[in-house]
Length: 254
Figure 1: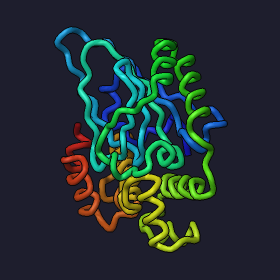
Figure 2 (figure 1 turned 45 degrees about the horizontal axis):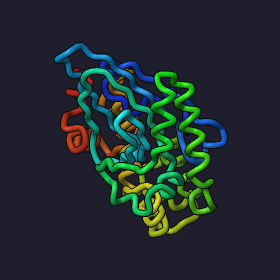
Figure 3 (figure 1 turned 60 degrees about the vertical axis):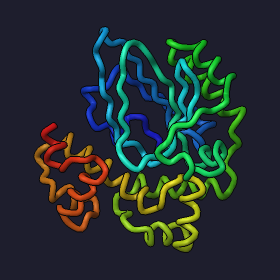
Figure 4 (figure 1 turned 30 degrees about the vertical axis):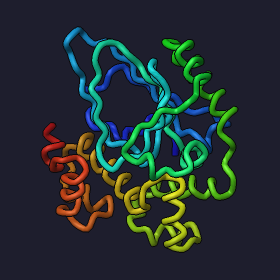
């Protein structure tokens, strides 16, 4: 888990502005998966619409106008870019989210301001030097976000298990692998992710399905559904319609 080359969630790579992912330093392994940095310089009057299917996680984001915490989403995320700008974001592990916000469910589908003037000043002062900006962000996280305790480590293991094992399709499997009750897994997801555990599973599977459809045009939709544990083609199509608002065939054509 935490490979910046992971292409899941990027629905339309050709539409991205200049975009980098930078691995988190080893000392942040339990808190940040990676840093992501888009930069754009668009002609006057031009708009670039960015759509992603976010990981079932939260992001701490620094932009010229301030610092925000973007919570987990229940659908795709869309943003219209105009003019010139940049952002430096940290894709948070469950342990870090719980340390930054006591009730992750409250930031579901929301982006809230974070009072972190020292983080903002350090990153703004470092940009456009991406390496220096990431270093400044790393220093701030190290100083302000505590290392995971045992419960937070279990929450990180919950995330890793679902993200890395495509055969995990039911909450019962997660509970068995973690040695927990179903209710315990549900409480863990609520406290550290802000989404129900089944929603976390489905998001990772839907991300993988979208990536397969985009990168492997010779594979049928039925085969993608089977490989990712969907009961059938119809269930995958239903997930696509519900979350992305279009069918797998429409996405593949687009």
